[in-house]
Image 1 (tube, rainbow, N blue to C red):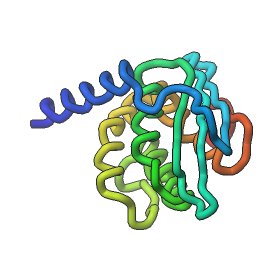
Image 2: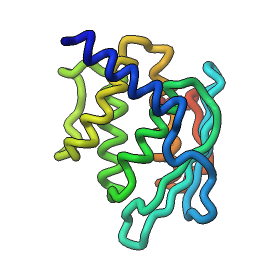
Image 3: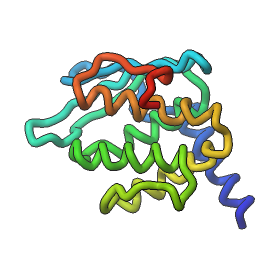
Length: 160
């Protein structure tokens, strides 16, 4: 059973890596940030349209990077569309903890969308490969930077 689940996760990652959703710079957006991971060579730009009510109405990305980086960004764009900024920040915290901490060390991020956390589970295996954590979290850190009006972020920042 575990091998079947791992195979499914790998299939989802490869699909999103090869066929990223919401890829490309949109015509209109009101927040953006660029992120880079010098260790792996990943570079990403996140484009957000945040409504007056604080809801993420649209979300795209572009850039280049490894399959994990691209898959994470692609999944993120699907998961966060329609979420409030507060929900996006909570999912960012959850995802970061999932990638960097054992289950018993992860923080409480409040009530989260179960469908979103189920989708994010496909990337939980990166925790076993510390060099890949920055690849998986780059898009999320970049999205968080865009939400907070920061123009750039890097995996070399202390917050990673």
